[in-house]
View (cartoon, rainbow, N blue to C red):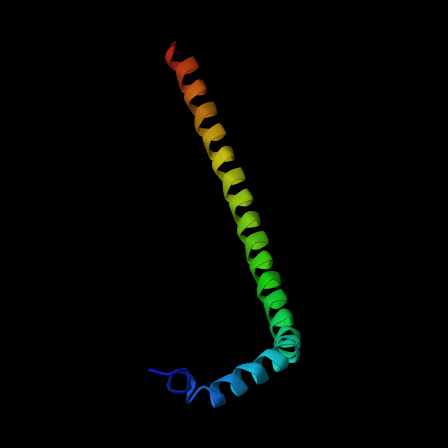
Length: 84
């Protein structure tokens, strides 16, 4: 097996690879210009959802605490009237 046989057929591959190497910075800049705003939009949406969920959880926690306090007050009042 000679080097000529080993490297035959690589011409087109080398040219394509070199072309992609030279074009990559421009392609990545264009892709970044498109992908970055989309990524920012997704992050903003995720943060909005997280804020909404946090608000719902805070309200639910407050209501649960109020309910527990109400039941404890009723139990304390029942214990006083029953003589405990």
